[in-house]
Amino acid sequence: MKKKKKEYVLPLVSQFEKEAKPLDVMMSDNTTTRVYTTKAPEDKRNGYTLFVMPGWGTVLPAWDKFLVDAMKDFDVVYFESREKRSSGFTRKSDLGMHRMAMDIKDTITNLNLDESKLVLFGSCIGATTLAYGMVEEMYNPFMPVLLAPPGRFEVPPVFRQLIPIGPTFLWPVAKPIIRYWINKFKSEDREQAAKYIRTMEEADPRRWKRLGLRLAYKRYWKTFPKVKNHVLLIAAEIDKMHDAEVTRKVDKMIENSTYLNLQTNRNTHTEVMVETIREYLLKFEGKNH
Image 1 (cartoon, rainbow, N blue to C red):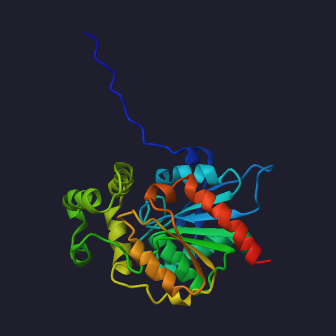
Image 2: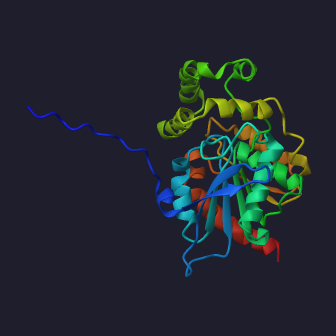
Image 3: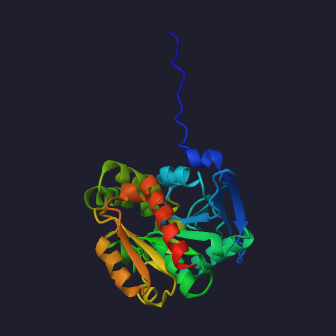
């Protein structure tokens, strides 16, 4: 009787990854971060670059539908922040919100992006990072789009107290607890839960702890009132992970913001979000002329 050949399941590669060009960009502290870039077809290019700063640990396939639609007429830059495995993070690498915002500035500079044609899109703590960088005058995009920016780094209850003292070898013990927290309290459907669980499975616990120590104990509420840019502020009021009450609070703090509710996490990660950006880009153009 012949033995069956062992079948191997290959890692999921998103459509955007297949078409994008990966670049390891050197930051000003000699740490590399990875970006994926695409150019829109010449006959459909709208002249703008969409720079995407996803949330903490987010895996690229979570944004695939959004990115594939965006690349039809935007030049796209998808940025992977330094807590992700793709970065050249070392013991000497700098940490914290200021450094993360500097990474955006360094990338804009190194890729020679025109800020007058830049749509800067951030999700969750990525959105807060973009706001911080604008306040610090690191960059001045034509249209900032902030999706559910928190005033504080979101972690499960009790874990904030455990981060400093918890050894990283206990990460396998923590994972089932986090998985339960995601499924029970922080997901609107199975698809959203699956995205977050994959992020957790691919996490580098040592790296997450080092960066988390610089984020989890600080509040960023004072940043938002200082934002002078006209901001498109996006909420998903059914999304359990990103509390829309927080986004409404941020809306009241930013003097020149447009608040928009896209209802679900699914809408904010697919073509619906891109169409919204296209629609409001025309409105921003009108206000700036």
